[in-house]
Image (cartoon, rainbow, N blue to C red; front, side):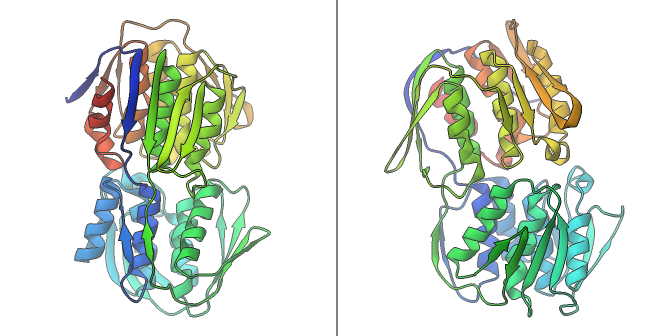
Length: 401
């Protein structure tokens, strides 16, 4: 078993972190680019394995799209291959084939896609047999399972002869990711309306343009957490914008409550320590990828907090709620499930001299527990899982150590 050893380090100087580019923006822009007639100028694409997988599959166009463990790549390429009338096998890792895709497949079939399941109903692997012509211009999609289904449908909508109306049913989760998709589409010339939870995209074409991908706010969150947990230090995170399309920029507001001051300048954001104001509760419905980071931070800082909006965490790379419960317990913290999907984070009262973190094939488990090194010695199992979204993460951690 590979491990990453993190020696305890509670203080550091003024460190600059050259953040990676946003995986979320990159994967959306790559699909939009593939659907554009002409050559866009796309720069600063993410180094993340998910994005590199997307780039390779779009370039090589093999008969089997093996997305490995990339959820967005699976969902986005399924819609892309369908609307571009391709015959494709869609598959991935064993865990990827345990992640549901039925809601997206049902919607694509309603529109006119010919798709069947090769194994278990509702799950990859899939066989796509092209597009029979548009049968319906309106689909109903649950909003509380995965925003990636909705984003996948939105991006192919302009290519449909009659455009598309998507009626979102029930509670809408990860709304900021849907908004990101729409705003990126708008930058490539596509109009949209979003009224009363119905999104309307008229038929049309993406226009050739140039686009530079922003740095990754999800990746930035771990550095906010590190500073919050440290006794002393300051950080400069390159390439972040105050008015970001990324929902995980909410980390600024969260960490303002947990002892981190953010100051935006021309080429990034400077982080300095300030007094902890306290965080009583937070709803992660629209920024679920921040949940692990914030849970670990609060556990270390002694903050008892109520969390809501964690429902989608059970169908991520792993069951992130169970994984958090297991690993928080190793340093005497708890994530307790209550009624109405409310979870209570009970902080640690004592820390052991060493903690070994299991990562569950989940990149965010490895990175979220890194800030524990400010209080104790940490061993991270299978540290290479970070390659999914942030391959240079441990190299950047070495700048601190």
